[in-house]
Length: 508
Image (cartoon, rainbow, N blue to C red; front, top):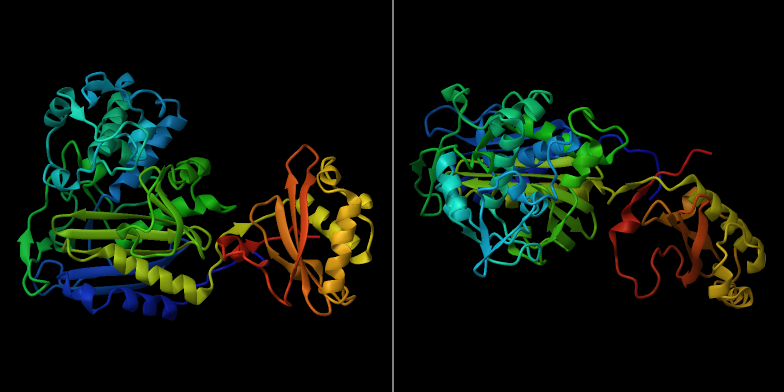
């Protein structure tokens, strides 16, 4: 699809409907209180609340504060990259460069891991959610002694995905080592204060008690609930202790997501390139997997403090859950459109990921959201238009403009001419009354590629062109295929996100 940069896609009505779809009866039954919100480019479009956050008469409101648990990891990761950008730490140095007392062991021997491996959950440290949940308040001395004693890896470093809270917590200790400050203070001063996230914190002390959601657990499918005291916030708090509101998380999602746009939010707080690093899958995660709720994914992985999904239809979706005894939270956003959903519930049976996922999926489908927004090079468009004119006029391939020197060696000009002549006959000749070139562009996988249609009397030609990015870009690939009228794929080609990119062509 071609067009201009899109404005807001979501109406208040469609946002509210999506929230009702996600925060369904099953979800409401699973928690005493819940809230879900749709945001687009940082602007909250609709909020839906449920229940009573402290099991009293006070209702859940838009300002109710919930614990967001492991969603905290994205704040830690962003802070680490900020310090990296300032030259204070090296993500690819062994972690013992900063924490020499740490011992990590695999098959009886000490091994080295880097900050990059720890942040992206491929350090070899095993999954530890159940243990960490109940040790979140452990002191720095306790956790330091644990690592000094030698923590065992469940796989060789750098080989497989395993979600390790302990591993990521080491980056909190690195932050403290290079700044001589508590990591929570560094996160607050680096991110929370500059971005105006005044309702987000690592501890509950600063909130009025009437604004805080209490935690609850159910063991009978929501028939009864037992109060669950807050687990503490100690040495492991940097990876899972934070509290926040839907408005603050909406702004945080857009701060991260806007890095994929031409107008990123608050570039002085963290470079857009560094924010994109957070949202780039580094450690593959097998799909299908229960953690992706049956979504149709081409791939998935863990970035830095964030999960990244490659949806076959909608492209990049970034997300992270948070779960602690008494709480379930989730945030997810669509990179191309800036549409996001956040959901909080005060029960660990709430299933915030399912709720936010269902709401976002409905919104993306109903808005026909693009899979990406792509700006082809001016050279790409110029070459495509010149080749389009040459093909339509019947010029011999030997005279085609913009071709790299190898193209007519790989497929000789006379072979190209014979093939194209047969294709033109198959479509009943090329029609003279073609739509303008921008209206015939159907796909672009990258800024250096275009696919467009040339309309014939009985069918169409789909032309694919790819440039190589030399100082003067040249066409390195050119081909055509016959398709039925209006088709955008060649025979045997499966559906892909690339054909749903919004393509912004340079102004004439």
